[in-house]
Amino acid sequence: LTSNAILIGAEVDKILAIALVTGVLTVAILRAQRTLNHAVLDNMAAADLSKFVSREVADRITASDQAVQPGDGESKVATVMFTDMEGVSTISEKLSPRELAGMLNEYFTVLGAIVHEHGGVISQIIGDMLIVTYNDASPNDDHAACAVRTAIAIQKADTRSSFCKGTVLKTRCGINTGDIVVVAIGTKERLVFTVYGGDDNIAARLEPLNKEYGTYILASESTVKACSYNGCEFDPVGEVTVRGRSAPTKIFTVKG
Image (cartoon, rainbow, N blue to C red; front, top):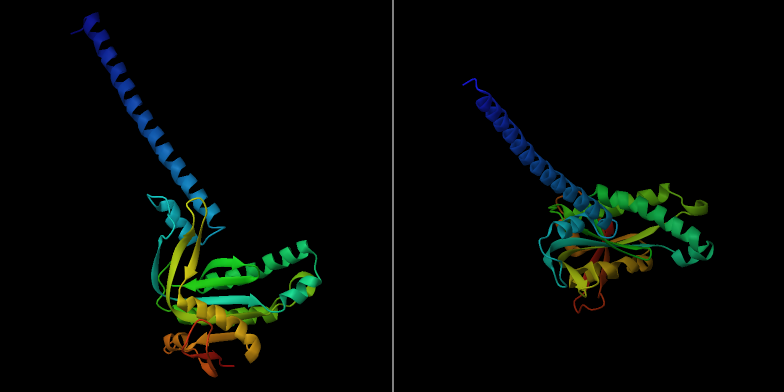
């Protein structure tokens, strides 16, 4: 038992065992590092992508096992709000293109914070207009009231905020609740996530009607009914036949 052959053999066994354990640990560490790198890259991709689409949509895209195809989406009852800046043509005449872009960025930063605070998702930015949805990417049982509260908060922010060269901006809002579909539209090479449905068209039509009625928030009857238990108060404005609809739509503004 004390011969050199046995002692040397035991040391060889130790070396082999250490080498085997070291190999296993090396493989495990490399796999863990690869997994961590993939997770970091996915998170960075989602963060970068969320600058162009909502964070909820970005997470859905990066977490999907399959590539997003045209037509992918889902339908649900949700609330849509269209916002538009009042008098942007007149304002833009007084500013250089760079100043105008800077003003819009400041303006959207203020509105974006309000939208996020009230659980909304900015689905699209078109010029100086926002399309905001509630209860589409993330569940929100109080979506109609959240949209109305967002519109009210925007009006308050408009009175407190000034932008490029002391410009005071005012925002018109149109809100409607109903069936929509959030869907990927386009080609396999170029897609955009947007909102479709007859009910989102009502919100789009209500927003410019604020100018006619001298208001800054107009909501449809379906939104008012959905807010009936949430402490929101409305004044009836009248009935309008929205383009693309045969039946008249009752419209309301926020009380006070």
